[in-house]
Length: 152
Image (cartoon, rainbow, N blue to C red; front, side, top):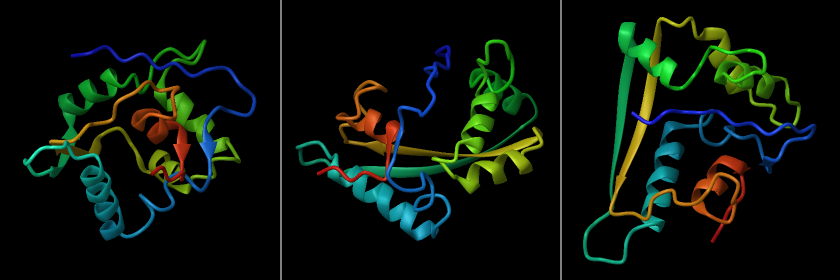
């Protein structure tokens, strides 16, 4: 298992560019729209060969030891001075007026730590999410830093 380390730069206004509500179109809209966007994005990143792009949606309900291990791997709780856990950063994101994401608040308010439904999207025969987190010209950086921006 790869160790996870959360690194959030100190900043007043943030480095993330919000061009619309981050999850407004993905998580708070119709499931059909989410699936269509995932499939279109995977198809757009298909490898130049004769093999088809394949996308699998996998839901896992984590409870007990499995959930504990998952939250530990994500460093959901833990060190608070300096803040180094994901829960602390999610709370700060909820307070960020620029983000305005009601989905985060609903999640934190409803998550009691005993069960978590996790969606994993697997894609095959695609280029994948390559690039560094701070390079929004690459697919991975664009996904995590430039919400709502369309790239050709």
